[in-house]
Amino acid sequence: MGRIFEKRKHKIFARNAKLSKLFTRIGKEIAMSVKAGGPNPDANSRLKMAIQNARGVNMPKDNIDRAIKKAAGGGEADYSEVTYEGYAPGGVAIFVETATNNTTRTVANVRSFFSKCDGTLGTSGSLAHVFERKAEFVLENAALKGRDADEFEMECIDAGAEDVIKDEEGMVILAPYTSFGSMAQKLEQLGVETKSAELKRFPLSMIPADLDTARNVMKLVDMLEEDEDVNAVYHNMELSDEVEAELAGA
Image: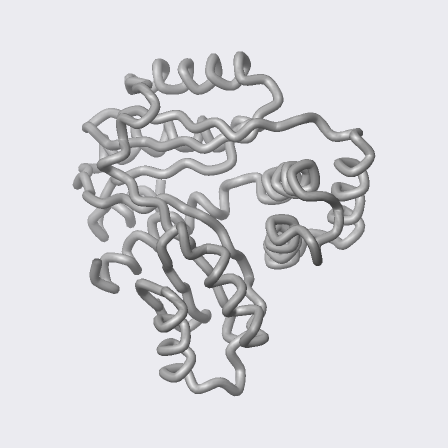
């Protein structure tokens, strides 16, 4: 996949990242990490990455410590990671990731959102050909200060990165999802702190959307993202600059 295409996708997902309830989502991830591997980040790589992500969005240290202690003491609910797949109006694919302590509530809510927006909730695995899961590492310019950008890019590629995207704010590294751990370890060895490190889903094909379709799709996306159980919503809608400008001005 070309870099222009990757940048376009990054632009599409930037809005979703801002709309998500970051502290709540990361708090759940911390809880699940502690339950899975204990409260010591030095011995629990998943928790260590969750803490880094929390710092990347300026989550207060007290909040982080409280979430760890609560989960370690058994005071946090047990969350399950459940995904839902379906189609919005215009044939746009929608992939929903949730962390829930009540799957009955979550599936009922997700189904109602699709129904209200004239969408269709599908079966698990129905979008396997539409989205590809990748490891994404976001680095700010401050983390790269004093480094030769081309040399650093080559080190990342040697470590398994598929693509390295640079812009005025920093760098995004994309790698196969199976390389998440090794890529994270390589960045740690290089002494580079990430703003975020996550597994995300990227569309393999895009669906062009006119303004009316885009509004209907974003209505569904917004409803899903506002639900407390939803962690992330991915879609394969492609917006022209004109449609994107209309949406931004709405």
